[in-house]
Image 1 (tube, rainbow, N blue to C red):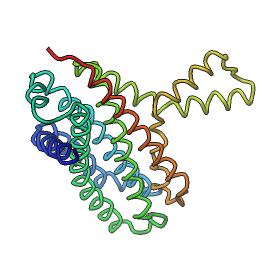
Image 2 (cartoon, one colour; image 1 turned 180 degrees about the horizontal axis):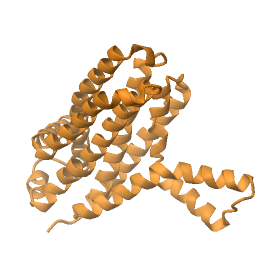
Image 3 (spheres, rainbow, N blue to C red; image 1 turned 30 degrees about the horizontal axis):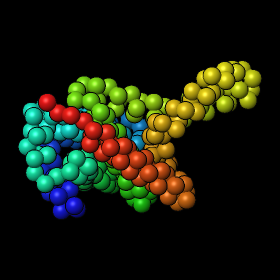
Length: 272
């Protein structure tokens, strides 16, 4: 089973690397990283913080583009071009197909992020060499941990893409639902915090229906904001390893559940 999943993952990875959209995303991310060096001097007081924050933002945004423009297309291509019949005619179960595609998507994103991480490190090292006095609190360890959680966030988003791709044959619908899940997941924590803080001061009292709705949504949609460590990396704050372990387990749990559900749904789909 593992050999078949790995074989399909490698094929998916090769398709993703050959996608021309990947090179456009590379150029955009490299432009942002290069721009960081050019404009660094305008933020002298917070130069170190801005540099780290811009680098993590570039990696995160490039990852989102990879998921939304490459991962979704790779999942929809087999169904749109009817090659799904050829794949499933070979000794692959539908569950293995789902897991193989997912692992392949992870490899594509890992390859792209590894290349961008090299340029990101070079960017930070260059700015650090030019303005060493503004990086007193910077830690490479915290930065690399933040990068890992950026990748974990993208891995979770890939699982959502695979889940919706198993339900629908239309890549546009998969894109809409995946983007909606990300937007809700990245902002839900702030909305809940705002309502609770306003309720504590009795300025805004949320209705019981709204509170129940937010509670249900918080259980259904993963909290993408939990994977954002830009603040810790930019300010050189100490990491809470217990919290990071819980967050990592939380992400892995969501990924496994989504892929198991996708496998069950995909087994019951009929293809014309």
